[in-house]
Image (cartoon, rainbow, N blue to C red; front, top):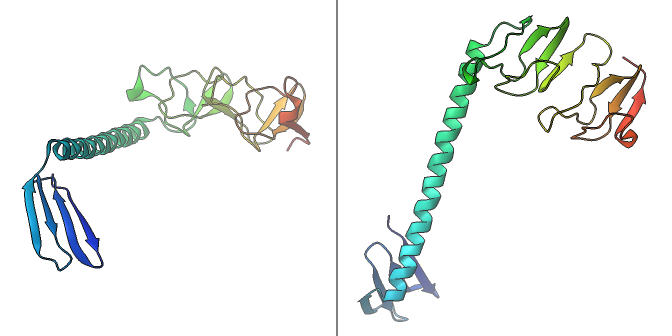
Length: 186
């Protein structure tokens, strides 16, 4: 991995550090080479640090690309193996047969939509949203960021319909009224 740094003054090359060959070269104001020497211990240490940092960045980028490829292929496999929308929910045995994001199932007489990828939770417990044709789905206590309510989400709660006024809303309309606005049920 070669790294060459140069310094120009008034358009004339004056200094060059060649980390690959570990040679420092200097030129005068007329562009005539006046010095070429091996790196000092300090320059060698700086070159080693620069190369190590570049290698660490390359390794991190390669790992990120591998991780993205693995996640993408896993998501594609999950979508390919997903049951048809509207089929009864069956407890997945692991990530290989988990429900993908957006997958629709029926469970306990209701229709549910998966709110996360690789969903192994039971609908009504976590990470599912009730799918309703008209009106608002019944408010369910979110278990975390994966199934919280966001601005504009509509819920029915204690006989009324509410719309969330905030993102990451995990409170009921009675616990945090400022996070909800009562609306006419659609």
